[in-house]
Image 1: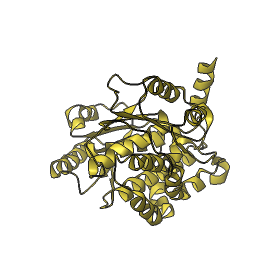
Image 2 (image 1 turned 30 degrees about the horizontal axis):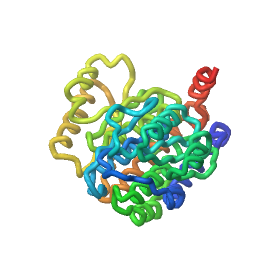
Image 3 (image 1 turned 120 degrees about the horizontal axis):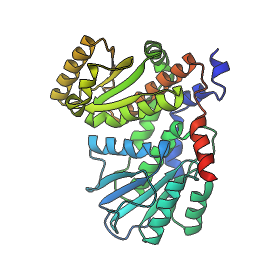
Image 4 (image 1 turned 90 degrees about the horizontal axis):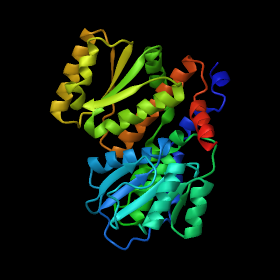
Length: 336
């Protein structure tokens, strides 16, 4: 049954994920941005799955001291560039296909404004422009996987570009060590078990503010792989608004609580109390412990579990997890 539904073999893509990290580093080995002024801001311009490396960068930077100097990290999901981009801003345009019009627009504006810029892409117009202009380029291998499944390539390339520029400390050894320690197969059964519990329910991913990027990305995996609705929020903010919705939920929800023993004790207590209240209103709570002393292991183990949960939800719903027909339909309409 699985192979009949998973026509693009996403299961193998998940199992092969750890190899993406070292490959991504190699792709960006010679991608060295030309920077004239000290960088105080980093703008990651990308859409959909190609913006997710920026989310992980913010999480990792907020969790440790990888930044060699203080720098704001912004994710730009729109055309052009944000108003605050100036001559101390490094713009990194990411488009897995190389054809994302918003990322190309950001690249063009960065060039017009003579801002330092780097590109991460597999091909397309964005890569062609970057090669023509002689800017820093990390060319991702040509594959048939979806951008959301290629986050390892893109994130590792992003990290390497930033270390090449001296903005963050060298991360090669840490990423390679994480890749070697990851075992996607070991979390497959756990992901399948959670998927069975989620069937015909709408997932709510809750995490601390420090880990909200993980909750956000897992929500996206449910949307795109299982082709169904999912939502995310973070503590303590959700305790001041969304939690009131438990009273009359209007749907069958399940909460997936991303717990982390490194979270602030006040946040951990809020999670416990929120779980108790949710159960009072007959909303199941599934705790997922993402604790890990090594930040990259925490991040990628959580994402792999999310892959399996969304993958097996897709199988239960008898839908191929790979294609995103609605997105492709919109792109075709926009191109007319």
